[in-house]
Image (cartoon, rainbow, N blue to C red; front, side, top):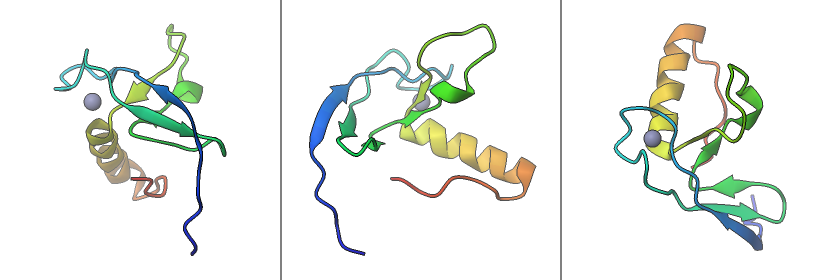
Length: 83
Ligand SMILES: [Zn+2]
């Protein structure tokens, strides 16, 4: 697959929301591209709903930890790697 050239449109500095995260309280560098993809963090805003409003971000290390936990629970179904 050819490597697409993506233009960076924005840089965000969200903070990982998971308690116990070594990066909690420290900004992550998340880069948004013009095609709507991003890297540097994982966004879960759409899954939000338990009394919290706003953006829900996890840093990559928390994301993969969570994904591994979910994988055990749901039998391996998960999102494709994006890191
Ligand atoms: Zn984290």
